[in-house]
Length: 80
View 1: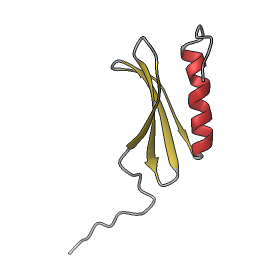
View 2 (view 1 turned 135 degrees about the vertical axis):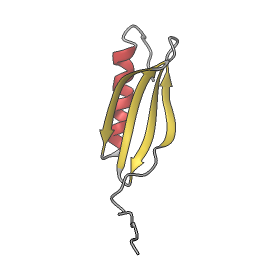
View 3 (view 1 turned 180 degrees about the vertical axis):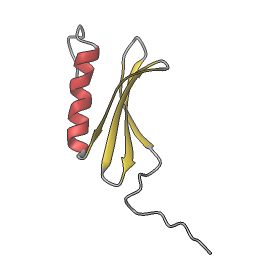
View 4 (view 1 turned 120 degrees about the vertical axis):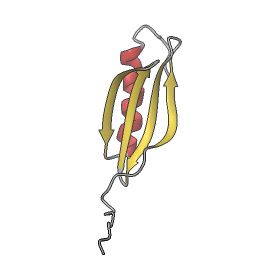
């Protein structure tokens, strides 16, 4: 009898934790947990995926989301 065991190193099913921001043109940045210590930022406009990056540190991912907003909406003056 053969058994299939899953390692703890296997990635988790992606879990969307937060919508970091949304622009007027529907561009959206989502933060997901995709592994035990791996977070993913995903920027999409409608069905079109614009950018995806993986991070090993949640704080770095959150700072990257803030920086990406300025890249995707450079004409916004007051970005919190």
